[in-house]
Image (cartoon, rainbow, N blue to C red; front, side, top):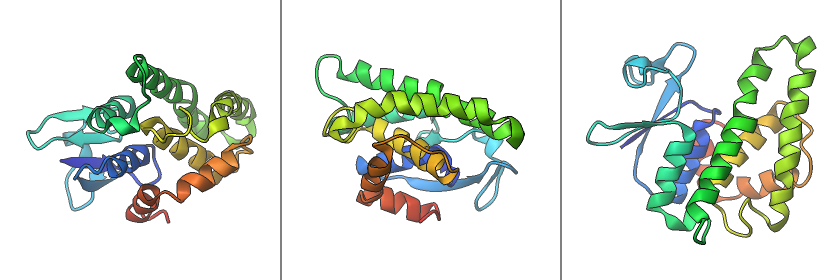
Length: 193
């Protein structure tokens, strides 16, 4: 199995979650600008959208999109999903929220000229503020780390790197997450540590 990833992009969330789940995989780095795969080859031959992540199974099947890959990981490692009769659906709800309200705003923000980014930045901070209330017990679903935390961490970590003044408790959340062995390993493997 291969995880196609670009250092520092949201594929970092899938990398972390796969390490947390102890799923064996090969990491394949992608240069998103040139669409080249480390070691040779065009990434668009693997994933025509050119986006990461992409998970290539040994039988040649390809799974793309953070929500789908993270849900697949949680199905294989139930300890990385919320519990209860609605646990799977609460996870999909949270992954979808993170993807649509936070993640998808960053490309728009980064594509804007610096002098007109303020409104887009306020929207990003609004949704981080909205989700911050969920972290009062440590993670998105209480005291237990889930695959949704890997996704939120990557976005919060990236926002902090860009200088966003994230609301509390994100400072503590990012610091706590950075101490997780899987996070440290993923950051090191992607050349970000």
